[in-house]
Image 1 (cartoon, rainbow, N blue to C red):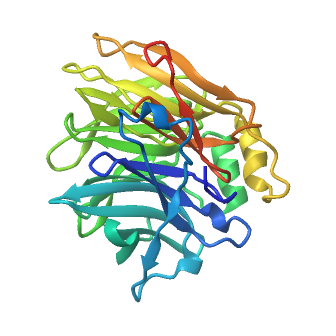
Image 2 (image 1 turned 90 degrees about the vertical axis):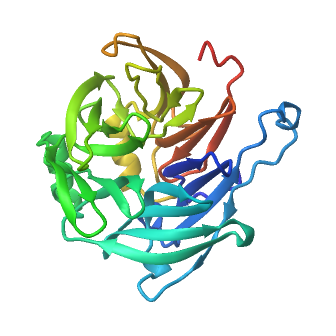
Length: 342
């Protein structure tokens, strides 16, 4: 796919537009400037075009404001909110000098993002992902307490469970859960008022119910014996399909989850430069929750030793296609020929 070797670490699919927003340029990637790109999925009936279509992600122009500097933009997780045809995009900025959430308005006709505001707070220690619950209201994850590289690595290796889930209620940032086990990906399931959170070190997906005051209540842990990355939930005919997903008691939820199956390989991959990065295996699991809401069936639609796509960190499933994002490399687009078996 037409993305530079500069990462595709976050994916946000907007069904109203059939567009996926892709974050590009994590960690500065050796001096590269952070960007947001879009990929338009084909129409469901355009099966015959898939073999000849040139799949290309289009970089968006950014209309800057006084509070935004693109040379200090290192995007990771992203989430959107759509109201009356207007799409607002919220992007986690992981730049060491600017740990903020950047809010944009998307102008499709001009392939443009208009920067509206930067939301910054001293609690944003190690931002990873974001889940929008309303206009200028969202949850974010802090992977760890420390933001220094070696201190953070020591914290995670000792499994100290000092990460956190934060809520921005439109005015202030507060803790939704102060001591959380290495929360990485996060997704808000609007119809069921559920918050889905992945724990990279503890190898679980956690399910929370969200109350009217936006406080959260832990409901379920799904143990997977592999390290999950970001989350994506597609809702279609009552089904939910995330990079991680879950079932509610009143409709079946299926989960497509992107994973880092060998965590120590991910660490070496993260510490390297673009020329020296060691490959890190990639994996996508599908999790089918059962009717009892406490058991599930897992299948593996995709796995790779890192040669084709390294360090898979995001995924979207649309029209029987998997779009898989990598921390520092290109996206991979796969056709799912037998979706009922995957």
